Length: 146
Ligand code: DQA
Image (cartoon, rainbow, N blue to C red; front, side, top):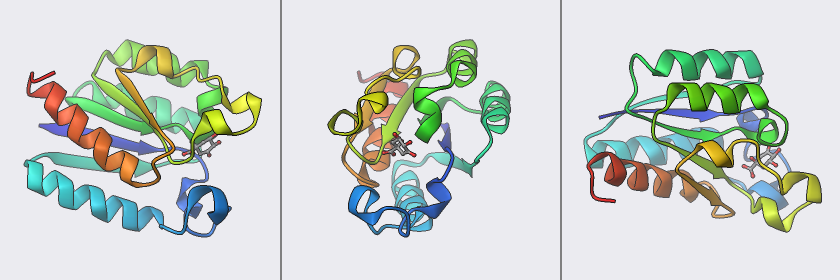
């Protein structure tokens, strides 16, 4: 089973970026946690981070030839990007949207996601651990248990 994990813009700054909102865990620490869980589940992971919308769109398109599922934190593009939504819809792969913070507890402009209607599920507000939960849920879904 192969899963593509996509971290969107500014997530490379995790740990130093507004820690009162996003916590003190770095992106590398989150990725390490994900790699450990993937090994435990026997899953192959590819993890990318990009600050560029077009790069994320391209990665989703390429995932059609490689991945069985996608975990994506589109970060600020969640609230703006029709292009990323269309890419996910076009790929048609099982996908889970993750947010570190609870977007519904924050400014109203973060309450709307262009992405949520085209993914299987959303995890928001559980910190970096949300990615691990997303991985478990996706593997379960791909194994046909849900
Ligand atoms: C975020 C929430 C978004 O609103 C924000 O723009 C981000 C990160 C999160 O993980 O909590 O950059 O996706």
